[in-house]
Length: 262
Image (cartoon, rainbow, N blue to C red):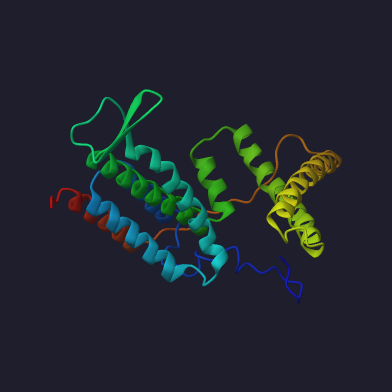
């Protein structure tokens, strides 16, 4: 967004990239990839908990002191924990070692120590994967992401859809913000019932305006000679050997720790 002097402010776009020790594109990809692989492959409580602790500590140090930045973790973490609640229960016959068992619709539901451990480990692994995804969102700029997509030889049609969707989402977000601001000024979210009505009205208005916006964008692109390709600048920053070795040592430490048995 332009600032008061007319220049473009890139501080918001590089929130983590300018403050984090990561500077090269390759080392960012390496860290995210290794973090995801470790979150998926390691099945040990201690290592997964330490990885999650390291991720939270890193975000605490490098993320701006803003509640909006942590809202993503709160919403996604709540969704993950709620989704793993179903893994606590095992169905079938009565388990002799069950902590709690009950019958619903003729099926026995058992809560055992093994099922609770499995659900807890799955939740922690999912949270570690969430940390890796959030790290990629904050470290990688859009130009770097497009450069990675080109180097991975993704189909041009898929890259084109990503570019158009990325630009289209900002229009939808602005429309939703404008509608919700008008609703709040009319006390549309004063009570729970009014909030539900206002939210439904906002969805309908956003759908209609987004459809109109998509048609206007397509007409504007055709006028400018759109031929199935949108230009997007690409960027690939040189990585530091020291940072790559530090990332490899960190991943190796977690792997070595996974062989440790309490």
